Amino acid sequence: MRKIATLLMALPFLLGTFGCVSSYKHVLVSVVDAETGAPIPGAKVATLYHVESKLSRASRRTSEATTDNEGKAMLLANYLPIESVILQKRKNDLFSPSYRVSINNKNYHDYRGILPLYATDKALLERPPDFIPMEPDIVIQLLSEKSKDAQRGEARNEGLSNERKAEELLSNLKGTWPENISEEIGELLAHKCWFTATKTPAFTPEDRYQITKAVLGRSGNIYYKASEIRWVSPSMVIVESGFIRSGVYLSILQRDGKRWTVVAHYLWLIS
View (cartoon, rainbow, N blue to C red):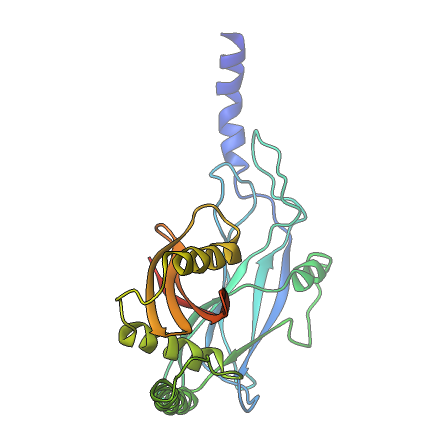
């Protein structure tokens, strides 16, 4: 009872110490255009703190500012070597914030969190509280809406080009899987090949055994299963395989005599 009474008497003091541990540093953030490097004024930047324990004594007072004409904004951020937690010992070797940037105008539209590199955190940890940086500690690069539109257009054109190439390869596909094709085109080709291949077995039980063995042997995991085999040509099959409730893959196998070998392997779907 005496221990409980002592704890109850000390509780107001303990609660009063919440959020009192701090070592705020001046952190200069720069926001620039990802392509031109030009400064971006009017972007809002702020600190964010992850709340891991309600008993933490580390101050989580956030700081927010708007970038000036030079694309720069000064923030105050709490950096501690160890996060002090009442009645607990911390194993973390560093308490630090992440950062957020947001902007919405005719040229830029972005909202994201930024996680600085450990080297940056370590350097800021050792910074004196009254030090005012002249050079940016954190540089955030944003793509303009014009650049995003251009990239989306390029991606669409590339996608159409890959689609045409995969169709062309499929029409000329014989008994050999094409070499030196990109991962994107290979994956498209495998997907198209799966739907055009026949489900009718054109191989012997020994072939089925060797095909399954080759696919499962590639994984080396006892939970990896080969669910279906489809026939592409007399010397090529495509196999659906993977883990239950996980990723499913398409494996391309070619026959050399009685031996079947996996020559290509592509993601099919994520369940």
